[in-house]
Image 1 (spheres, rainbow, N blue to C red):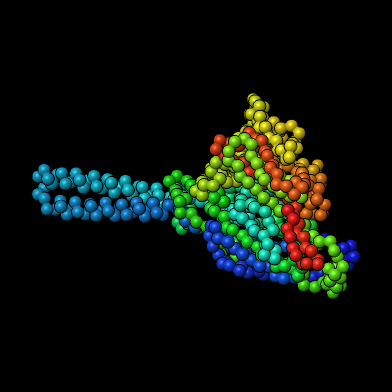
Image 2 (spheres, helix red, strand yellow):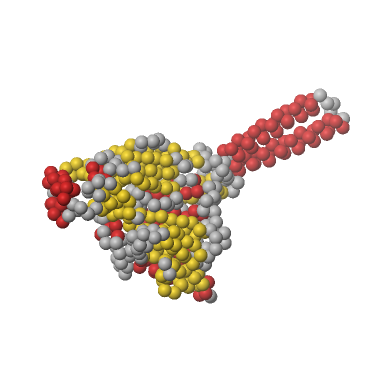
Length: 500
């Protein structure tokens, strides 16, 4: 939050104590796909960056082949009943006669059917036909986040939060980060295992029809990011409400083996609650200085924070996103699989780690005999007739370095999952992790240090146009913008506005 130098100095020298507060939902605390979970944060000095969303997830309807076994046993029972009828009929016939001989032949055939059915049952009881899922990264379970301050919605439109977050996750985290946040279950991003084992075992056990885990999810995009700590004073800005919409089951990595079925898979969250840090002790001088500032200050008080918006384009080779912002910090683009909206889409863990929704495939692969197979992708971004980069990106392999430098500069400490999949090389980037991060700010994002060095649209809504030839047939292109927005508070009228 922007304060005068004297107030910042006094606050920095104060003894500040935090307490973790439990936040209950103001709506339901459970639900399935499409459900909305709403929270109102406590009043006071709140550290938004500390907000943690907790819940239990249950995935049900997995196929353990029991339905097939039950059906085969029912068929066997019917065959045995037919055999009993034939045996009773045989007893009424005279041995040696043609009818008796024919009936014996029927009984022999029926016994052969029962023997064959027993073989089918024995095979089915090995339970090698089944369906399974990987427990997903927690942020994938969130379809949309909406944030409100003093009853005003302060976030831009992004109806596919899970896609945006997953793309940024792939290009900014490493194995150690994933393992350090085990309760977010990000392990599925680097393996075809989850906490319960591999997704494709040889067989499953009877009763393996559901999975249940607990989540603690933090590090959200949006107003949760402002400076080093996103601390907001609700006595100035008003109460803060958060809304989370639960995703569809296409966020699950689903696997079907043999004649197994994933048609009945469902997911539900329960025992939903949140936690947030609140400042419970600070120097009394803080409140005095705030009051003095409000009484004497004429300029608006500003609260800068991260914002984001997105658009998915499914037609042509020129995609666009409309955006209006005083500070566009970066644009993020990646291709989407044709089945990214298919709730029963499955994947093959022998050659993929990501399910179709999160498979960002450039439609390029390397060839040991031909270097042109990664070229002719023709990637270029245009904003108000200004092109990024100055000439189109011809080689898809260059995206990895452009993204790395856009995020980390020349740092030797850069990390990502772009090359972390089955091959552990550039083909992982091309087949599953093709994310283009184009930085537009001169250093850190505007919300970090309050220096708005990103692209300024000067109050106008402009088109961000991306020319491309790097999606698989039938696929789409996701375009997202990371921006810095500001809450502006008039100290005289106490009126708050949102500056995009």
